[in-house]
Image (cartoon, rainbow, N blue to C red; front, side, top):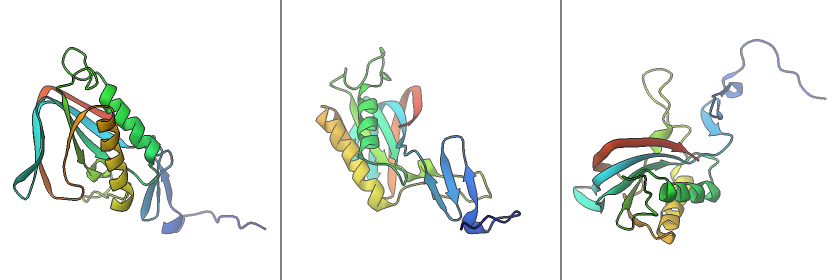
Length: 177
């Protein structure tokens, strides 16, 4: 015998909200049904990332990839994102990183891409995957890019980073995989 839900306002733990992109919020947790690594790609003439005042990663011309994972992301999404970053024709002359051996990719983990500021004055980060889920996926994405022959620099996962870049164009693209 199943229990029927009573009409009226559901308890907080039973609150379900769905967005057009498939995000589901349930009480105090937010999950994505379909698993999408998210990236903001920017074509740059140069970029670098600093941690505690020291440069930890830098590139000349190429792409900066700010990357975030959500709870249900897995290796397949990371591999697909790496392929898209490598092959997407965002560089000058409609070229890709794959077409331009001198172009680099600066990968910076950015959990705030899954921030939600629709309610109240404080954004929530519930849709962002926790470090133990996200870090191996970011590492896999970097490894896949390098395996494809890309020159890759990175930030430091979980660190307070200062990213400096000169957006070329400007060209900026939001990409969900």
